[in-house]
Length: 159
Image (tube, helix red, strand yellow):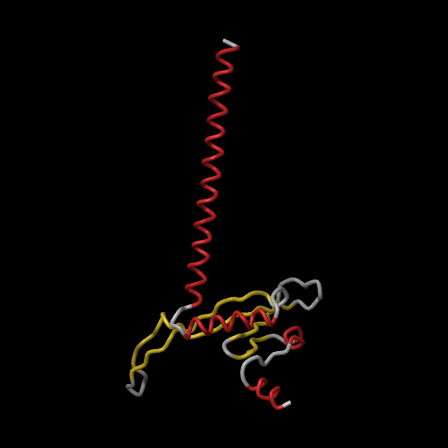
């Protein structure tokens, strides 16, 4: 019982039932993991008309703001960034907590998780583009070979 109390005051504040029944607004699960509940334009299959999505909020270790506060003291803080984790209907509470733990560890190591995610997506997109170009080149090569063969057959047998 005491362990449950401790768990409820820090990270992992929301229960799966609360995730499904929480009203409009942004709700913290702790450690930067947030659930945003918004109205949706159309009614869902359940008829609630609400969209529930997870995101992780953190202070970027690489994108920083420096300056002087009104009292004349210098400051250096990481810019606030949000990274989307997915729809609460399609990703489990355990999975988003695991992702949030990974992202917290990246921030602790001085890595910006959003930059990493974008770089990975760009690399995957470039690899997909290269694959499509390779397929297109192969199709063109086959097409040219078939044209040459057809032209030779046509010339030998028709002309």
